[in-house]
Image (cartoon, rainbow, N blue to C red; front, side, top):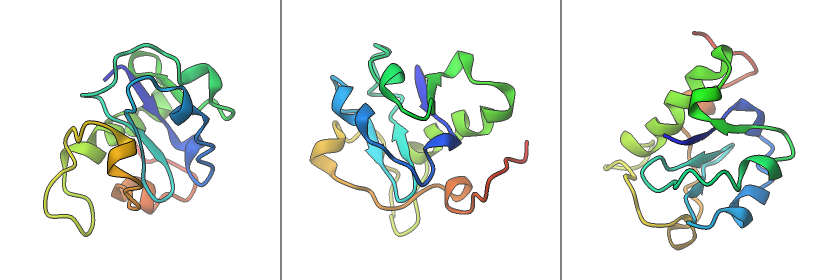
Length: 115
């Protein structure tokens, strides 16, 4: 997974990164954005435009943010609340639209991560 979005995006979702992404791989949950690891081309265009520094390469995520690296992938790999199937790689966030739900980690997040 080349890039991930961590907890700094929760309840902020500036969405500037969506405009910069050349492959439309940033999806909108309810409280946070998620980068699809199967669709990301590792270009890095999203990282410098994030006003809250929530985006980084998965290999550079600080230890305390690592749960969000795994959770970013989980958004696409397991069925989300109200869905029977995982999102997988739908081929573009623009065509899919706002997903409107989050993983359990994000949905219940209150400011600290248990590792």
